[in-house]
Image (cartoon, rainbow, N blue to C red; front, side, top):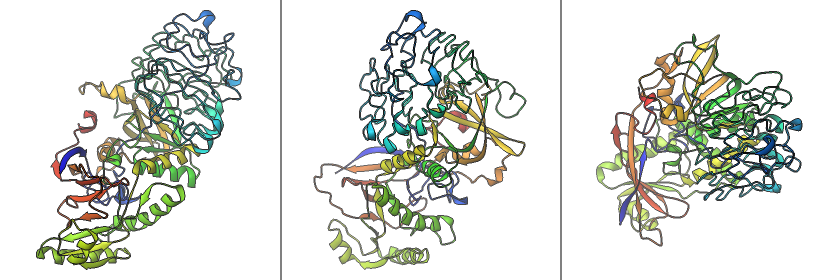
Length: 591
């Protein structure tokens, strides 16, 4: 029997775009880089895990820390980050941060971190952190966060915190937020804390606190400034806090800290910031500005793969911006997890070329990186005599595309392979398979982080403009966007210039492209959206199928088909329902 297990919004086709039913027409949906992959990516991304604190954290209620220190700190040294509910403490804390290091952390590693009111957090945290790095990540009042954080810490890093140092950003009352923080601290940096210094730790909900903190932080440890700055300082709902912070820092002032970004992130609801415009440059004066070499918008499977390629293969500086609190929350995690052979696409389409070559590279990557996958093969079946000519056309198209091993088999042979199947003929495709898409994305992300890629979650690109021959992204915190009334002019909280911008925002990619002033709208492909449902086969101890089974494709999709995951669970779907737009993204992008 079947029951409706899950509704999948958008199009299917996580890995190579084979099942893409959704935005963008040809080339929309994962399928590799190039002209046909505009809007690809299938979803946003982020990461699990609360932010880290160090040993001196005052367990969530440091209401009156004496002498400006956190209660657990020794002689004014900022051994941990800010405390949860630090309602007036931390005044003048971190005054003696010698060279930015956490004095209590043994040689930079945060070995014993407190966990105040950590209700169910840290589930699965630090699971694979090799060589003892970051041995106790905490999150003050981080209710439900940190699930699965630090799962694949590359090379002894805490999800990218290389070589053992977790040089801490506080997380006070960070209920479910900051998931995935402390992930991208590459080579000793904690979310952009350059070269290992923890020079300016703030506290969430620190209303009016942190006045004068970081007064003696040396060499410009200013929020949001590059080269040795304290980029990872977070302060959620910091409505006027951090007054006078970084008072004695040199080589740069506190620029306002990009709200929501992990490079100097300040609060997502910093109500005292910025101007109020999105489409012109007249308002730019006074808005914080940053620059990065490459920006990837969207941390779905395509965005993560692009970030890995740019950082690992090309050695570029990369920032991945993701509006969700974790990675792969869109179509990258709502698909059949099928590795397609490359049968369906016309030979002249780039998608045909990318799917065939991408399938070969994907199998190779999975083998080399031990990503769970299985080449189980596919049967495309004809159940009526009128479908047989279409089946031959489909096989010939696959052969033209360079798909090896295709053969036409009679119904009897197909039913010997699958006793529960009834058909007249079938095309057997031995090259098709399945993959654990979550593990694949984790691998992409871990490698990118280990080569310095920075991830900024809960951060939204609301548009951009061309100036001086270069694009400037308009950045806004996701929470601020969610609270937008839809009537007033939404202004950016950060301007980010870049040499290279990759729009891999999944279903949101075409809508986002229209919000870039200076971009020719004729270059933006039309969007057609569909929604589908999957049905899970229940109450079966032994899976009744061993292969992927597909019908003759229908208009707009590949038809309701049978897929299996690596545990043998059988799903039917998706069906196709054409819709006028996306109902699960910000109203801002739909206007």
